[in-house]
Amino acid sequence: MRRLDLTKYMITQEVVNQKNPFEPLKIEIPYNLKDSIIALMFIPELKLSGLELLKQNALALKIEGCKEGCIMLEETEWERIKRAVDTFQGFTRKDVGLVERVTNAEQIDINNRG
Image: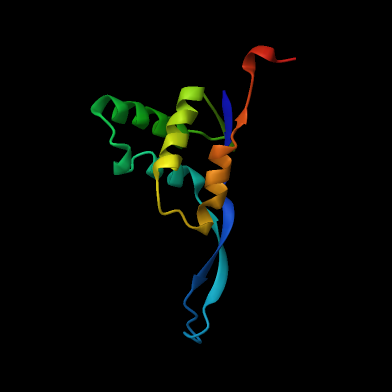
C-alpha cells in the first residue's frame, strides 16, 4: 500500500497589478492536488482503452471522495497515478509538490503492523 498526501499546498503566482500593470503582484494561492492528479489521470497520452478508462475513473472517484488529508492506495492504484505523472510533459514549477508527493508516496506494510 502507498500513502499519498492529498492536502493542498501553497504556490506563488504573479497577477496583474491594477495600480501599476508594469509591476505584477505575487500572491500565494492553494494548489489543488486532488483536481490536478485526477486531470493527469485522463490525459490523452495515456491512450486509455475502454476498460482502462473505467478503472481510471473508479480510482478518480476514490480520490474525489477522500475526506482525509491522505489516501491509502493499493500498489496498482499508485502505479496508475505514477504512470500518468511519468507520461505527462509540460509540468511547471508549481507542480513540483505534486510530482514529489506521487513519486515519493510512502510505502506502508499493512501486514506488519506492530
